[in-house]
Length: 200
Image (tube, rainbow, N blue to C red; front, side, top):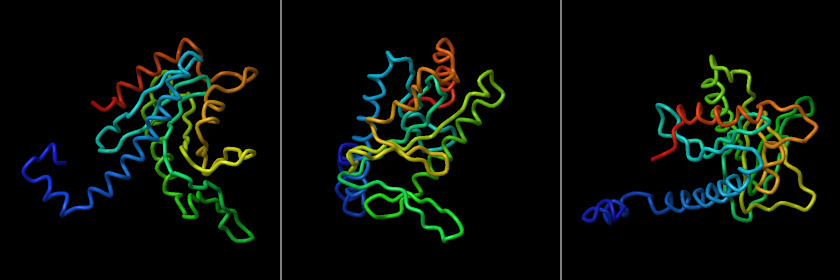
């Protein structure tokens, strides 16, 4: 802010909550960078990755789009230092209502955000030769508390995971049929890049 507005930067910072929001953005950026590097390192294993993709007609973005044998993955990176991530059933005894809790607080809105992004990506594939390719969503947490025997879980179809487990569902198992043939991964990535362009 001070660099962009040398004369007014101090006043703007004094009148807004930018310092707090900047700290939040910084934590998020660190999470995106770490997850992004993890995905980049996996390119030789047969995936393509798009980072920081703009959503058309919106100021929002998709952290990572991954194209692999199991389909397209919308990956949203979140960093909560020392936070515990868990799935809680807050429904009554007759119904199940799974919610995402981080640091003891209901953060199910994060799931809703990924669900929306998955829908947008699936819509972008409609009417193309890749219309039947499955689109998945994942919340990938960085620096959270994960027990030795903890396993990723799903809520409303969104995978909640962490870096060391992220590639398992993306790459799939050797015996499983592939949703995207190896020769189709790069063309599909180019198609998605034309719609969800990387931030300049």
